Image (cartoon, rainbow, N blue to C red; front, side):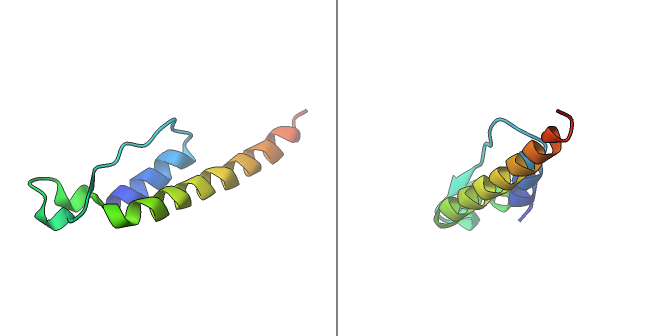
Length: 68
């Protein structure tokens, strides 16, 4: 899913927030169905993005310490 890949890339670059279109059944939405997250996948997607952010934060902290 392209929207998930873009969200992961955004988190990796340090974005301050994510905007996502969410629908219970994207295939029946009036527009942008191919770019929407399914509502039943939202919690897992946010959890994965939070985990990615946590991992990156730890990595950057270790990197920063090298220059102290």
